[in-house]
Each structure stands twice: as structure tokens, then as C-alpha cells.
Length: 112
Length: 114
Image 1 (cartoon, rainbow over the protein chains, first blue to last red):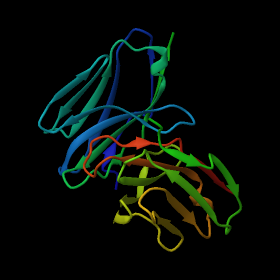
Image 2 (cartoon, each protein chain N blue to C red; image 1 turned 60 degrees about the vertical axis):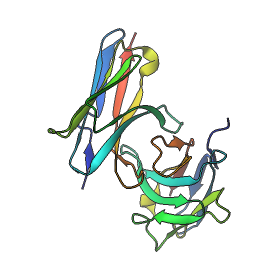
Image 3 (cartoon, rainbow over the protein chains, first blue to last red; image 1 turned 90 degrees about the vertical axis):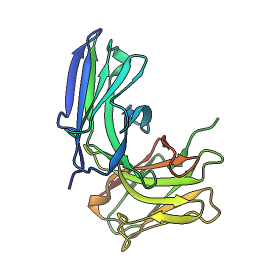
Image 4 (tube, helix red, strand yellow; image 1 turned 180 degrees about the vertical axis):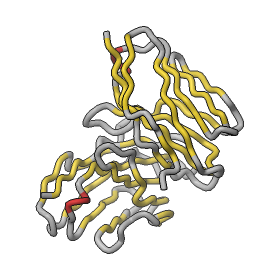
């Protein structure tokens, strides 16, 4: 029962171009969504989040879009840099506490 | 500010042996989580503590896994006996308050069960 899905296991993009990562969820009780970035041999680090009362949140080169009706969110990285090469996890939580449910991750490779 | 500390970083054991992992959260963080991340998957919550009390252990395989946070600071996660399918990275995370939006993760312990 995968409540959070990242259907693209990998993504390759040229430096300077846009990276778009997608995430779908099934649980309508989720109301807070986060993206984490993970380098090899390190723990995930928080990147950006969005509450269900918004449809867009922007932080520098990173923008997250939320489409509640479609139960879909996406992360845009513009412009992509080689240091962005990592695994990106989408996560969601409900109103009660902050238990996170993670997607399976998307590995991003930014080519110089 | 020091981050979440975990040890050991790597552990190799044979099946049916026991193993323990240690986590020291960020100072002052009341909520502590243990996650299991199997290769190619996202982290899955095993147990959540609020101070020294368990908030959620619904996904903890209690026949072989146990965890404690006796003084509300450090925590240990134990597996006894280990199975091949327990091979994974075990991540510890903490937040200042329950309901806080950002969890801070440690580097994890990579467990290999042979």
C-alpha cells in the first residue's frame, strides 16, 4: 500500500536546464508535503515544503507545486546545477502529529 | 549546532545474531524517530518517541525489534534475532516539537545481514 509514489526512479538533465520531479499520493488526509534531498552515505536533508492551503512555494532555485484535486505535487529546480545530483524524496504528513510517509525517491543526475 | 549523531555507521552480522544502534538527537529535540530504508525505497517509520514515551510503533516488528529512549534523550534500536531482510539503512531523526514541520536526519547505520 504505497500512499506516496514517485514514478520516475531516475532523471538526467543538462546543467542549466530545468529538473522536474513528480510525486503522487493517495491519502486525502495528507495536508503537508515535503521534499528531502539525499547524498550517498548521508541522511536526508530538508529541501522545501508546502501546506495544503497553498498551491505553490518557492525558495531560490526550488519551487514546489501542489495540485490537491489531482493529489499530485512536483518539484522544479531551475537552473539545475551539478551539485543538485542526488536522490530526492517526496514525503507527506497528516494533521495529527508529523509522521512522514515517503515516496521511493528519484535519482537526479545533472550533467555538466 | 551539532546534528543528529548515529553509531555505528556500518555493521555486518550473520542472520540470527543481534545488533543495536544508537542515536543522539539534536539537543533539546523532544521528538525522535527511527526509520528503516531498504535499498531502492524511501524511509519507512519504525517508531516515534515523544520525550521517553512511544507515540507510534505500529510499523515496528515487535517480535524482533525493540527500541527505548529511557531518559528522553539518546535512543537505542535493537534487532534480535536478525533476518536477511533486515539489511537496510537505519535512520534516526529528531524534531523540536511534535508537529514541527522539519525532521533532521542523522547519517544512518548501514546494516548488512549475511
